[in-house]
Structure formats: C-alpha cells, structure tokens
Length: 243
Image 1 (cartoon, rainbow, N blue to C red):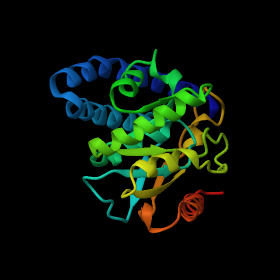
Image 2: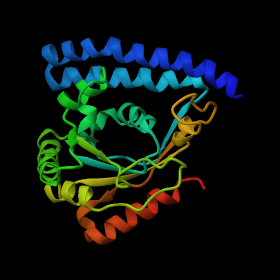
Image 3: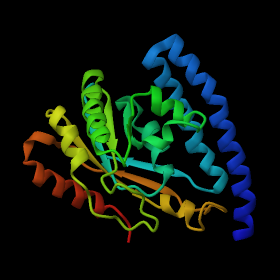
Image 4: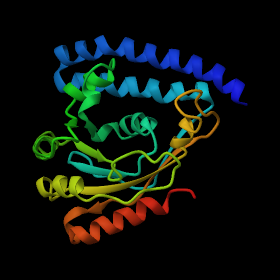
C-alpha cells in the first residue's frame, strides 16, 4: 500500500502545484478586473480544483449540511483542525458565505496562489510572536468581515491535530470576532480523516480515507453568554469527531 502511496503522492503533488501556479496570475487578473468579487470567484474555482485533486489519492470529500445557514450576513464557522486540506472544502462548499481565515503571517508570502489569496482576499495574517500585532490584526479582521458581509472560519485549537484527537479550544479569537459581530451566527463544523493525509508524514501521503465535514445547527451568538457559547460550540464540534 505504501508503494502505491509514493506513486499517487508524486502525481498529486505535481497536479496540486500546477493548480496553484495556474491560478496565481488568474487571481491577479480577477482582482484587477473584478475587484474583491472577481477575485473571490477565481478563488472559489481554484478550491474546487484543489478538492477534486484529492481524488488522485482516492480521497473524496463529503460535506453534510442539514441546516439553513443565514445568508447575506456575517457567519462564524468554528471547526476542529486536522490538516491544510480542511480549508479548500470549506471555501468551496460554503462559498456563498465568503469564508475568510485566520492564518499565521508566514503563509502570506512565498506560496503561489495561497499567499496571494491570504494577502489580497481579506484574511487575517497573525504574527504569533507579536501579541500586539495579533490583537490589532484580529480587530481589523473582525471589522472587515462585518463591513463586507463576509464570514470567518476559525480553528480554536490553534494548531492542527496530528492524530485526529481534538485539543482544547482557546477563546480569544472567537470572543474578538463576536465582539465586533454581535448579531452573527456561529456554525460548528466537525472534520474527520483530514489528518490521515499526513499519517506517514509529509511524504508519502495517506490514501483512501474520505474526508468528511459535518455541519451543526447555527447558534445565534448573542442568545447565550459567551462562556455558554464557547462550551456549547466546543462540545458540539467534538461530538462529531470520530474516535
């Protein structure tokens, strides 16, 4: 099985990198000609290709959503975090909500397409070594998504879970987002099997484990105290994570 993984991982890596190279100039064109909306449409299509490229590894992505998520307003998606492959499905499947991400500042340069999107697409780029910068950036990000009716996706664990087991949720990021978006709805997401893509390390990649994303019932942020909200969201997200 691992021999097959080496072969498929090589093909996947080539295709993945080609997608990023192709869409880097297309993003630039979309931004120059169509502004933020034009850029976002290009980003959506790019992430469709990135999601489908996982099929090379025998990995389909399945998103289950039984709920009506409010549109034309800011929504905060709160999710566990298992790998970089959590992100393309969220961007594509929830594209009508324009989800923006909180990312470490290092990813804002040097990576074709991804860095361009983070710098010009409205994401928050956080310097984890500079608390003052991180707070200011989160405040600006919170105001930015409110102004543009975008949504935010936040991973309160802070770092990826390497084995799929969820970590404790930190409160600061979510609290900041809600402070500047009091009318928002919080949508818990549970992601499974994304971590298995890297179960061998960076190479070869794991194959044949479908990634699933379960959407839980939206919660009106100001319907309960923040402490109750955080506890409810954390419990809900973790309830959907496979042991």
